[in-house]
Amino acid sequence: MEEKGQKGLTVKQYRFLHDAWPHEYQTPSEKGYPEVFDLMSFWVLFYNGTPIGYTGHLDMGHFHFVGNTYILPEYRQSGWHSYLLRVRNANLGLRPKITVLNPIDGTHMANLVKVVTKLGYAPVVSYQGVKDVMSEKLYEEIRNENQQLWRMD
Image 1 (cartoon, rainbow, N blue to C red):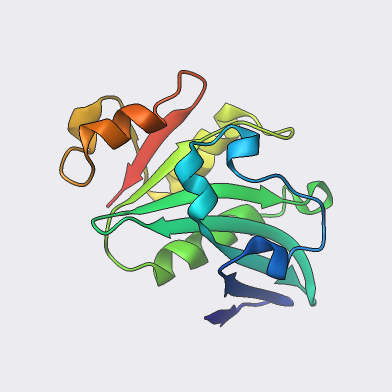
Image 2 (tube, rainbow, N blue to C red):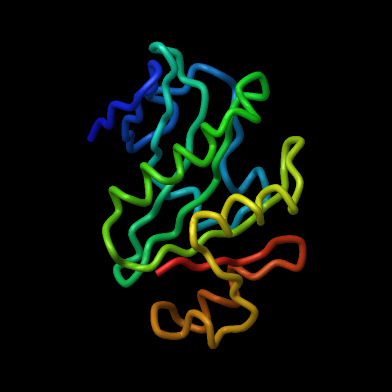
């Protein structure tokens, strides 16, 4: 899948991040995400042919895990983070999307909350908020006191 945007932006989907990302990166679990996030496929944002950001998704059957989003520091504060997430979500269909907010690499929880709130996500405060799409065992595996779980239907 390739999505062409405006202003020299292109978003392409890759099974493995290393196929498109020439910069150094850590796996999601190395960044502190739940290990299941290491199985994600990635959407890579290109600006005039240069990869400047990525985000992931993992089809879990009844929902998609989404997240592990990164924009190169010199391209932040431009709205491209939100753009990349909108393109990814639009291409994933109508199933719920569950994300883990993990403040890493110079990001702040308040900024992440602002982005996902604008996109239509709501916080998951207990298993009751996801019991229709995931097992309690999986919920307990992905919970982390330093992170937040959010959902968008």
